[in-house]
Image 1: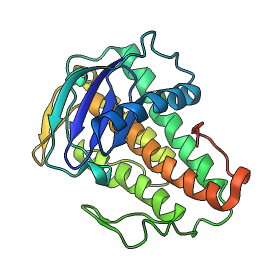
Image 2: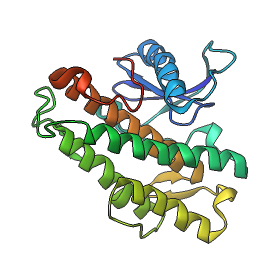
Image 3: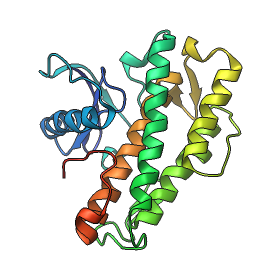
Image 4: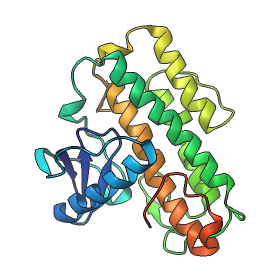
Length: 232
């Protein structure tokens, strides 16, 4: 499986073949191991077929100025360059929408959304305090979609919730008619294009949903809906 690595105070491995699959660790080896584990979770959730060759082939490594340990990254993967096909776009778009539904289903299954992850309480990151409760995690996920991704692409999306926000982004993109060109543009010194947006939505929804699920399960066990099929 072709893989690209981003690093700075930690490592994040991204699958170049499955949009949104990642592994994060203190070392590259740990990130790759978690990437393999995440591939199984992702395929169970998305009903995608596992890659025929699960042997990892690192094709690119990128040094970022951002802190990977904060679950951040700014790279544009080499595999994200070039024109998108309609089939490729539609497939990733549906996974973005599915990930929004999965976040909402997970969140709605938590009896008390104010439980606290003591390991994250009052911890500072580049974007402020780290979300430490399911409510804060859910609000952060939704806010990033509305106030960050939509803003970068100059989209005034619906603000009624995570699902309508994600759908609104793609509705507006498609109205423009040039979304498959996948043209690269720069926002605050960071490169973006349509394909990166697709990855970032799926990745960001899943990485914070995983933290939410892990926390909620530690309090409420099997009462929590495992909408992302996480193996925790």
